[in-house]
Length: 395
Ligand SMILES: Cc1ncc(COP(=O)(O)O)c(C=O)c1O
Image (spheres, rainbow, N blue to C red):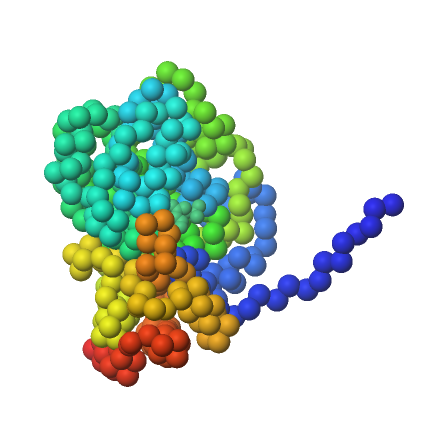
């Protein structure tokens, strides 16, 4: 007889989630997740899928028919975009100035594409001139870029210009909005982007596991005309669309409870209004930014490409960033994270996303962060930072 393991209770700690995601989930979304599970083709679940599609079209700013949620996290949506749009041997252009741009390259290379990179220093957004030069040199058929680069806290500016360069070369664009959709202004149709994907656990504050994606008609035509089948069965758009189309058929079992959660999160976006949501993120994160800067810690990015949903705060001299992170969790229940790659040990990454992007969280964070840093010997003016944040939040 096998010996069964002793699996005990699990009581997660209470955390203020101000890292790069997940963000704190609203009680309404938790309630939705506990609704009764029905069959994956039950009329009531099909209604939920339809509501999700409607909510996502509003959120993306698109009329695209092929708009749905991938069953998987943001990386599955990334893989859906690249593996469907690219055929083996095609050339894809992606950025090298951040962790997730590089992941795009890895995903595209596994789809059989030739990967070429356009560079910018970490902490800056891509320059349209450099993208135009890379197009001339490499003639890619697909160009992927990251709208909100979570590893650097950089927002890609000049998105319509980048799309124009791609379309002048008859190429297709893929935008990663995992860390920005619902928190930062984005217009899929107006900016002429072919494929846009995102995640549920950041600016939408739903649990991870269902990821928004949208394909333009032009992108769908390219996919329909493929010579070779998509290398992934699970993420093949033709198959997945069988499930999301008007007369749905089984393709895989829908992540039912997670879809309930996403539907509720989208309902909350619709109630708030997407423009108000962008404004809230900018205002609340702006108070955070102003506070840490006043304390003496500049952000590692220029204001022009500041990403409100992810703030890259420079680590002050002489401070052990790991120790600050540990103390914030253990003493204040606040999660933020450190830097990656070229920014390892250089920045704290402070998220301000979705239901976490609230004045009380930012006030709590700025106070706790300043006090822990001062206690660790950093040269920071805590009182001045707290005052500036408080003033910005009361505006
Ligand atoms: C910009 C960006 N792209 C892609 C991903 C991958 O998403 P996931 O971790 O949900 O698979 C992330 C996750 O942090 C991200 O921030």
